[in-house]
Image (cartoon, rainbow, N blue to C red; front, top):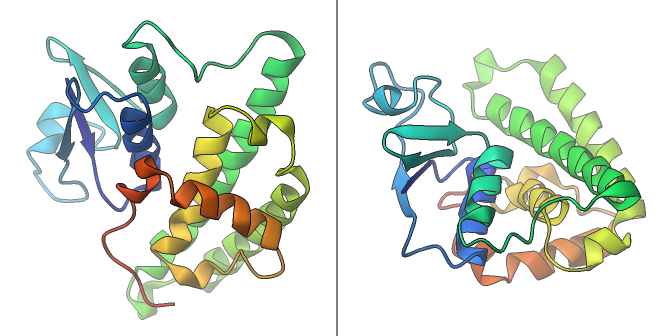
Length: 205
């Protein structure tokens, strides 16, 4: 199996973390995809050009961090990341979606800031700055939820990958005034799966 990623994508990082947490390094090869490039050979593998993308069976693949992680989690027949049933499952999905909203916000923000200064949209940057600030406050109040403190799950992995975008772009500054949230994220940054997938470059604040 081949897992196609880019090293600057927090969405791909989610899958890269799960690959390591599930000890799948010998079963799933991690490959770099060339994206946002005209006529990239990667588009012959995955025509959407998105990452992560898992080629898992005779030319058949699946894209998107949630779907890819589902497949990775089930490869050994002992999944641990599935949402539970009933009310606990609703809470699991609620928190995962809020984590994904934060991930979407920081991703759009950083993407805009990577543009040349003359091409940036001040409106988009300010909108995403405010969204990240609101969601960081939300998570300051939710970080002690049992689902965010217990065994590893997708809400935790998604939130950690969202918050730790600041390893790559320190200008996000979501840590200001939120020491509990910062401590929570720091514990994940120290895990092997996160340490090995940390960003390889840092953008100027």
